[in-house]
Length: 371
Image (cartoon, rainbow, N blue to C red; front, side):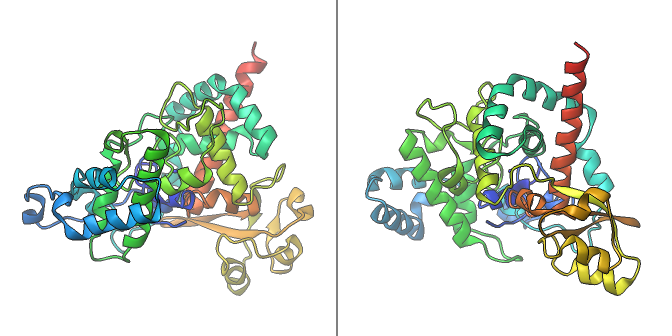
């Protein structure tokens, strides 16, 4: 899981498996905030669709209850009958206009800024014990966890005010045309939402989140909640929404990253000067953010790596971040950088998380040293 379904790539996570590119609290996959597509005025002015009157929705309810005997059919039908179409969800899920320029410097400035750093330091101090425990268990350092929560939802300030049931029903049964159809994915998430709520005795009508259905401080999609969220404080309930107790948030983010390959003690990236030769640079860029080359192969292709990267035990990726009309920025990403992109499939997102976390860590450490 920041103002746009960072949003969904949280999908990776959340599902963060895809995903799309959007969620509350972040920006579309490194391309900056998505620009909503306008719907025909007639559509926006229609009365809300009552999904309980739709045969396809009730058929979905029957199939869901049949797949999961623990779910009461009448309860499932009742929940879906109360779902309503949300025009904004259908609008915001659309991709940004073609030709929208990427700009790492502008993207970074949205997240690595004074107010968010201060809020992150406060979050860190409040949850120091849980951050330490998470690192001990899964190897994910505090700055990465704190960076993700900061980019996703500004530490709970921007978690989304869409009713998740409505958002997911809209994208499950009325996914807009004009982009690749993600109906199956959102139906999986709608099913996961009902399973989660039934298991924990939650009222599906009361769960709120992003326009695409991501929930809580870490903006987990419901499917990711069921697969990766943990009851870290062992109180018998997984709570990703409370801002006064972030134990489960911290444990769940760490568990998610570990499940996607986080390596204890490994840096996320190194400084690098990309090859001057166009062919060499293009060769290293082909795999995009997937680590595919050794440090020696980087050097053979004319890349200049930081000294500590030359002894890196593992593969690297040449990650390019565009800066509009200015020259691109580059880093050499490790498998841990790639793991962060599984939370949101964007190198811009991943580096913003990392640099926000580093800035917060410096502020926390400075405060400790000043005591």
